[in-house]
Image (cartoon, rainbow, N blue to C red; front, side, top):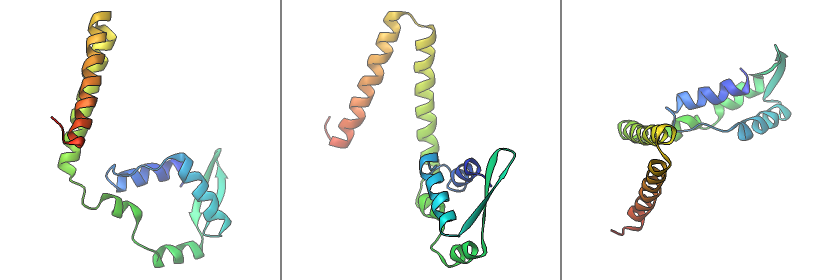
Amino acid sequence: MHGYEMIQEIAERSGGAWKPSPGSVYPTLQLLEDEGLIISESEGGKKLFSLTEAGRTAAEDGPEAPWEEASRGVDWEALGEIRQAGFGLMEAFGQVWKTGSKEQRDKALAVINEARKKLYLILADEH
């Protein structure tokens, strides 16, 4: 499996709760290869990684999979509602930005900025 596939797999297994960046995955893969826990080979211009015997043993003896920890206690229904609300907001904002007049775009930007401030006020417990 190559690095990008690993990123996608982790995101899928964690239900989207954790999607590591390439900047964290590739150095980790190099470290694991340096430690002899994985090996790599080039195939079709991509670097494919697989566990060595030592890597399999370490994986079996190691802690719980990090994607399981990352997704534990996640309220999936609420997360879906949050994503839908955020995407809906950005879709509406994008529509105004693409098709609205300068005045409408300015108003939309003010609404977004005001919403951001109000969200932070919720954390500050101010009204």
